Amino acid sequence: MKTNKSVIYWLLSGCILLFIMVTVGGITRLTNSGLSMTDWHLVTDTFPPLSEEKWQAAFDEYKKFPEYQKINIHNDFQLSDYKFIYFWEWFHRFIGRIIGMVFIIPFVYFLIKKKLNSETIKKCIILLGMGAFQGFLGWFMVKSGLVDNPDVSHFRLALHLTFAFITFAYTLWVALDLIYPDKKEVNTTLRKYARIAIVFLIIQIIYGGFVAGLNAGLIHNHWPLMSDGQFFHESIILEKYSWLLRLTEGKSGVQFVHRTMAYVVVGLILFLYFKSKKFALSTQQKNGLNLLIFIVFLQFTLGVLTLLLGVPLWLGLTHQIMAFILLATMTYTLHRLSK
Image (cartoon, one colour):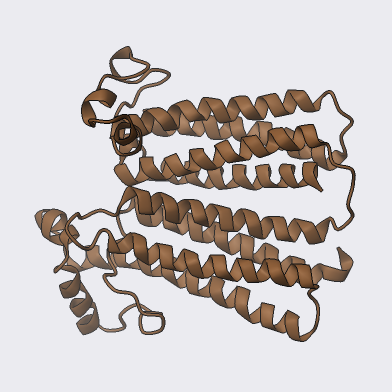
């Protein structure tokens, strides 16, 4: 670790910024702020409007789009309200710009100083590409809410959210490769189960994006069963005409998958934990698995409370943040079981 300290700190600072980015993205979504900026410029909207005239011009532009014309026009929506939602979307994009600079400038510096070996250079180039693609996905998502429907596509939202999580996990993985450079004998059995668990966790994150995009957490606010004491509520079948649409576009179906997948993720992590008891583990591996058990049960509890309380902003945001922490813990544990 000593020889790569500055590179490790750089990568970990990127992880922290990505965490902040996803947190602010969650606030942006939960405050319905994501469609407040109706255009995207790399430089000219780096800072918010600096005069009342420019604020009014931005607000007038916003009035041309579906969110204002179909929703906010009926809510006595004033310039002060617009400034609030504008701030969160601007701040989200501003952090994205900061992340770009934090990745690109030190990367060039480390290249010049020859602090990166060829393998790390390849991984960092992948990271830069992922960051650029994530920026594109953000605008691709926003565009879907600026045409007819005053809301973004839940598919694009889930893609944007999940790719942010994956970019974070890969950044952390690259940092862990440098923190723990020594190779060790791999327990292929535990690695296999950890890989399966992280795949299902990512699927669960995707469905978390679907739930957020469809506001599917605002229905069936009961647990352990859905409304009317039903495990599989009849509205799942009634909402859409095919099983594919029911489980990807129907609010009831998407919520059913998300709440059911939570049991699967908990079950897989529990299985991995108890399976690991049969093997001699390092301290790092034990710590990773112990923390994983704690975090997954905490996240499950937060999910239940978020549902029962009808998704209050602070709890919805906490649930999203904990998903991030769970993925970080899962990534660390998988790394310690793999290398």
